Structure formats: structure tokens, C-alpha cells
Image (cartoon, rainbow, N blue to C red; front, side, top):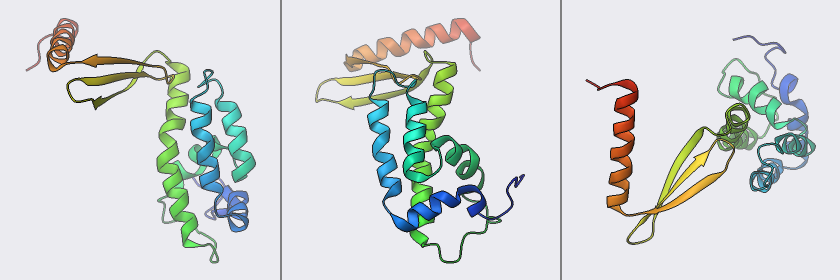
Length: 169
């Protein structure tokens, strides 16, 4: 692993550490912005604004924090943390990373392939399932489906898959 800025955490996220020492709620404040931007109709195209808004709070952009530091070094034992750093900083940074990195990844992948399937979610309302198909750009489509409907969809997809890739072993 390359350590472009050395082994000191402050060389990567020093401003974030300084801001945390003044306000221990910065990660919560930054996280509160995310649903606001994701719910906008221009998401994921509003990501640049989210990146800047997070930078105002944390002192580092969301992209630089995730891709420039946490994704590479959050679990790296070689990184030296300031001696007087509250233990809660690393815990909150790790939790923020775990919560936010999938959203950042979704943005970057979604910009390149917005129509691609991101996820399928479901909930149950007593008799029927609500199935949500979510695209990479955050758009979604909900279906109310009975078990019979779900079986039909599965059979159709299985049949399509077998025609595309051939029978499986």
C-alpha cells in the first residue's frame, strides 16, 4: 500500500480531526445532509453539491474522505493517530465510512450506468409483498405481488437466464 502523505493520519484528514475536536457532532451533521440530497429529483447529479456541503462541515470532501483515506487506511495499523485524539473519533469515522461509502460507490457507479439494477428490496403487508427494484440512479419501481406473482417472475427470469447463458450444471 502506498502512503503518499506518510503514515500520519493528520496528513490526510487533519482538518477533519481539528473540526471534530471543536464539534464532536460533525459526522452526525454531515450524515444528516445525505438523505436530503438523495431525495432530490436531480440525484445523483447533485452529488457535487453534497460533496461541497460535507466539506464545509468536515473540512474534507466526501469523495476525498472515502476514497482518499477511509477506504485505504481506516483499518491500517501503520497509520499513526494523534495521541490526544478521542477514541470516539475513530469509532465515529469508521461508522460514518460504513454508512456512507455504499452511497458514494452508488454515485460513481450510477453515473456510469444509471439504468443498471442497484438493489431489490421487499416488505410484507399481510397478504402481499411489496417488491422494490432500485436503479443505480436511485429511481425505483414498486410492485405489489402475491407469492404466485413472485413465482411467475422467478420462472420468467430463470427461463430468460437459461436462454442467455445456457443450462447450468
